[in-house]
Amino acid sequence: MSITENIKYIKDSLPSQITLVAVSKTKPNEMLMEAYNAGHRDFGENYVQELVDKEAVLPKDIHWHFIGHLQSNKVKYIAPFVYLIHGVDSFNLLKEINKQAQKNNRVIDCLLQIYIAKEETKFGLDFMEASEILRSSEFKELKNITVKGFMAMASNTSNEKQIKNEFKSLKEFSNQYSEFNILSFGMSSDYQIAIEEGSTMIRIGSSIFGERNYTE
Ligand SMILES: *Cc1c(COP(=O)(O)O)cnc(C)c1O
Image (cartoon, rainbow, N blue to C red; front, side, top):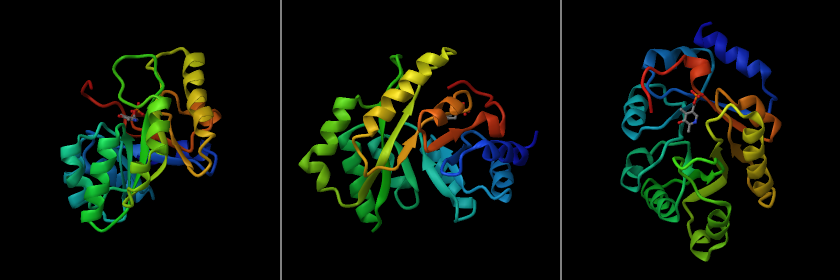
């Protein structure tokens, strides 16, 4: 199936309140333009340089989601235009995003990345660390960021029950923050489970653009 057909197929199967982020990392601009011409506007990238290069030449009404691990010293490159930063995993990073947002005279929306997987390799905060950040007075002083919710990745496993429980734990945690309205979880392999468990934003790469030909 083509990119256009893939997007239509996925969107048709989604409840209307769910946002689809098309994860276009490693994919050439022509492929993003095919999705764009099919009416799609939300794209996710996880390398700063690649995102900056794509933003420079692609249409200005694209919503660019940064979904990777963001280093503090690179925030400045995406601060002028980024739409939503999904992977915030420290207070220092939040402070740097706030500083760069201020320089650009804007407010940047962010998600705190929560570690829910039973694996050693994934980034993120645990529930306790996230709560501590959110109730600290230093956090409340950051006027140029808005935390809109949480992002997470489940374990890379075929055990659906485990994936379900991991998503469930995030949903339960998020219930205490009724002011947040974004829960970003679910990828090509697990987005159906994610939707059942309360995701509001899914991040789909390979099911739209095909397999990526490198290993991360
Ligand atoms: C690559 C990536 C995705 C998309 O993965 P697919 O399996 O290709 O759908 C989603 N979220 C993050 C954080 C990613 O890095």
